Image (cartoon, rainbow, N blue to C red; front, side, top):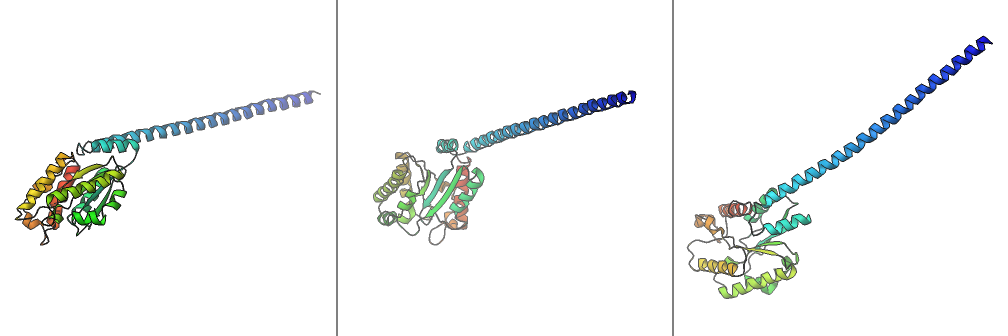
Length: 264
């Protein structure tokens, strides 16, 4: 009888002790699970906070880069940045605006893409070579470009290609028609004008460039006067009076400086 009671006591104690350890084990598991869940929540919250901070740093960097742009185009870039869209920039013109690798438009495109990033700026280059503004108009060669609806158009309007072929009054009329086609497709387009490359020993050509500059001023188009960067024109153009390697370097250097705030 006494042995039975002792055995019963031992059994009861074992059950109680075993239950205690089992309960404590379950509590530890619950606590460990709760801690792990809490850590996961903290990790998610920290990741989200870091992502927000990184996005804000990126936004401030973009705004800082925009501040380096010419003042005339800054509002356009800020608007597109707020929309989360890149500015679609088109460089277009005559044979002076060659789309060949190493020509000034290609160099400018690469430099601006590197400076501002594809999330802020997308650049395309379009050469309408061997044509006067009159031929461009009659053949409608500008219309497919207008259909692309660029946000920013940098146009070299056939000043040299037209030289000695078309009187200045008609050339400016053609220019207005070309620009009207772009504005019809995108009424909010920003337009920048620039002359073709200079040529040596010219008499009437500089007077035509002056007329183009006055046209830009009268119509409130920013005018980029890169001619002042050409210090030895005769050695900077080919026999066909187009930019050679040195001429392309002069032109591209001026344009890159203009768009990153060094010539504004």
